[in-house]
Length: 440
Ligand code: FES
Ligand SMILES: [Fe+2]
Image 1 (cartoon, rainbow, N blue to C red):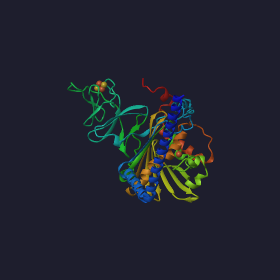
Image 2 (image 1 turned 180 degrees about the vertical axis):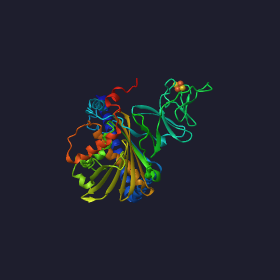
Image 3 (image 1 turned 60 degrees about the vertical axis):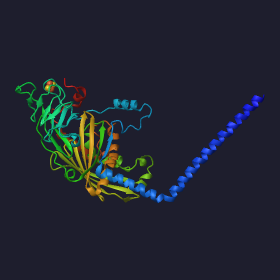
Image 4 (image 1 turned 120 degrees about the horizontal axis):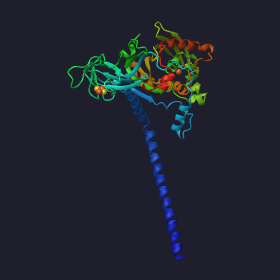
């Protein structure tokens, strides 16, 4: 009986001590919070100024010294509607079940295509690129010139892009060190004084403009029919950064967006700063929304198309940020967007590279004059935000070869007929590109 009473007394003491500890800790935390609030309220102005200086320094750093990099993977955009649980499985399933449509155009049009960005290809650098159904090796000779050859060595088939090296202006195979010159001819074989005639590797026409190395692809082997002139903006303004997307779609879908005037006020109407207006439409008036107008037309040269876009950013019916955008589509895979705003001009250069029959890499590089560098840097993110809204559609849509055109879709019809010039009778069909990825 005595031991039972002792036990209860011990238990009671223990509970009292535990409660006391909790009280002590709680009052300690409350005191810390009080001290913090007192400190903040006594010097909040200093804190605000310090925070502002930090933000300003960060903005200047990203604008002038450290270009913005923004990248989205293939499964990052357009899959929010799928269950969170087993997400990867649902994404793969959605991709596998997708119907791409009938009568799709050939997947690889003829034209210039950006393969690598100049900053990634140092002198003596070698890069392997798989695009347009080709395996290519891009290298920069010691003379600074970027060149493109077929990846496979004519000797025993090693891939020059994987372990190959640059010697002068030649590319050397990693397997038995045969060297190939600028015209693709084999110029040296270790242990042999002379090289048998007729050994060569296929070379491709290459050019380097707007910060990228471009390949000329023509299914009939024709030499370049036109070129991409250097962009004045890329030459004279500062580079503010890039965004990159992988898109699950036919290449034609991407430039067609520029001729699809009606989608602008449907897909891109919600504020560039937030998607909140989708769920709460009343917010559109407060945080702002975009009103677009556009005109698409053929350019002076056959391979060029032009789009004039005007944009209003309305907050409570007030246009707080009008924009005029002049768009030049140069060939099937390059677009230049010149923005004129009240804060100064900017240029966005878009390149589309078919990594596979229905897989596109899209890169936007942004340039602006020094005085509005922060706007250019912000544009890398903001433009990506609007582009993601298109990607979410492209990643799920099917191609409709004979659409039910409405009156304001006439530019889509005109675009398709213009884009048709980039296909040849011999262009590889989508079916062949999908079914025969291996060149047996
Ligand atoms: S495979 Fe290229 S040198 Fe032998
Ligand atoms: Fe769009």
